[in-house]
Length: 152
Ligand code: DQA
Image (cartoon, rainbow, N blue to C red; front, side, top):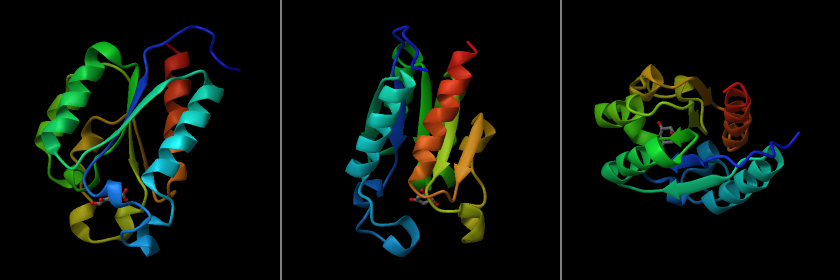
């Protein structure tokens, strides 16, 4: 049932190279573009009674700035930090300063891939992690955020 109470938006944040979704390594990441993902997320969010702010950047600091913005303006965060997952203490620190639910998404199953992808700094903060479900992972993450927000 859609939630009639107006809520702060859920931030859906995407890290480096995800702007090339559909073009880069489609055997791993599929043929859908990030625009397709944004549209599917917006449609599902409406069904769930959520609003979203969907962003992508190739810059670590920009991701951190959106996470900071979400501290005041966001109800939850869905984040695919892409390669920064495996390297960024700064993104972990920013997420640790955010109080709402955080779901980490990876389109590919990072655990089936190179060992350097097996470790995630972001997982130290994430309330849930979805990997290997393709772009459907974003929709699964939004459903989980809706469940968690309904409890608050
Ligand atoms: C990714 C997995 C990361 O290891 C990789 O660097 C990406 C995308 C994924 O969605 O599967 O860029 O986060």
